[in-house]
Length: 309
Image (cartoon, rainbow, N blue to C red; front, side):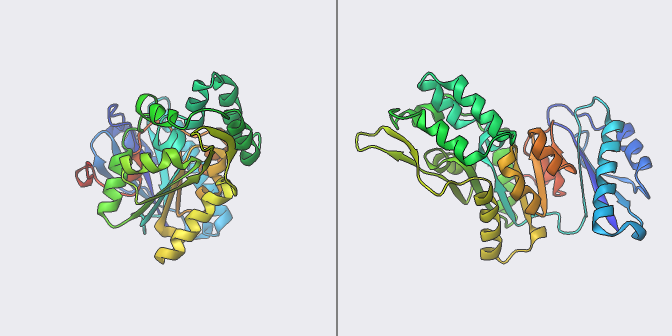
């Protein structure tokens, strides 16, 4: 069975050299010539796994081993590797996490800073994202600490604290230009996602709803049911059914433990600068160095095909 290994470097650090690409191609079983997607930034290397190793568990273990071996060849260079079958690489559905994925911050932590509780809330956030505590009770606990905060603070946080992750708008614009549907799904809040999804260019967004007092202050509660790990998976499955898509048509990306279910269910599930738990789940598609355009190279897009918003 054929596979393709894509080597990807950050756009501002072209570290995929001819020598590195050739070394990886020589290592891979029946490795084929290098196909450059962007000189110095991304290249595809096709290879063949013998049919004797074609049962799913054996194949998956082999790909994990190959990924680890390629990373050893890469060494300390800022180069990511994504391994997948070559068929159906261009996905028709993108499901993306927001906090620490499409943006560089955790919105609830930035809100907590205005209540003088950022370190306390951030510690809970980190444990939840690492999968050390359940997401839903952790969210309720953090939101309770925000009681009394004026809802107007959210606009201030977006304007002063939130920064879009490099490459995110290009990722969404390029996929949409080629017919894909895009959804921002977050364990955060619609007060953020509604604005940020529009800024980035998503077709739709799903998130939790903060409850607000008549005087415009947070009640310290969030509407139930909470959008968490299983709700993110449900979004992937619901949209796939609505759009008539197969699993292989889908791409999911996130950074934390509550993204694992959707990552595992997607045709291509990617961990973006992820916590250890999600990197274990997405071992053949971990983006640790590149920006979000890495997910375009992973789909086989060439640099000249990118759509700049």
